[in-house]
Length: 300
Image (cartoon, rainbow, N blue to C red; front, side):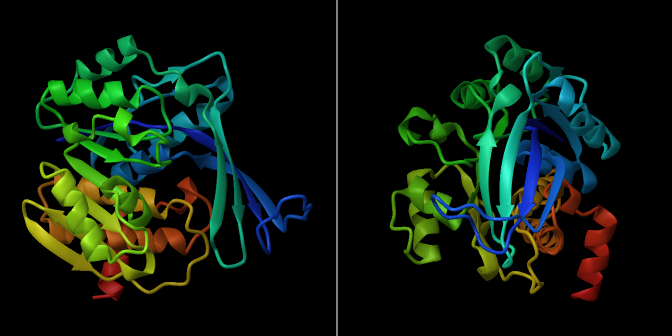
């Protein structure tokens, strides 16, 4: 099974600050770094480092070639990745002393998907492949519809949340990868509702889709054909949460695509996410499969 990721690639400009900047305020950053990022790239890196077969579909500008190199070095297939004349996508990230983040994203080349390109990618898909996408590229509704029409399983991480959910063909999604806020928005429930209630409402609204719902320090919940499961989070010191959800997504998909049980996939993804939050950066924080195995051995 292969994971075909129509994913964003962003050049991350990361600023370490004591507290987030407020409107009208000027502050001094404690540190600054540039790294590869983007939800799509992070998820492809995680899945590839976990051992999955990953094809990354997307676009970069000339200054983003190092991101393509990073994907290839991690084992992802970039043969269909395009280089555009315009700029790569980029993100401005603030990380405060508590390890929390605030992010501004500029789409750049990530917004250059075309119908012809989507068809070219999906034409090579096999019936048991997964199609993964986030909401940082354009033509998301078309990608979902065409993948579904071809009988492929669609995994959707709706981040950042779209303003008009009704414009998305969400009934065609096979698996939602969401946090508790995104789950509540999709389900139409109160953001402060009980996690179990939110999950029940989301499954009732989209009964043909499974749901993985991460809930921060409270761990993760799953509901699907295999049943409902909950796993607590591993306790680690959070340094930077930037790529935690992306790491979880990539490792979970890698595990289930390898035929592992949902419970095992949740455990491996939780371990990978715990390692990611204990490090700074987006792509640089994504662990290898060996690091995840060692972490699980120490926390058995």
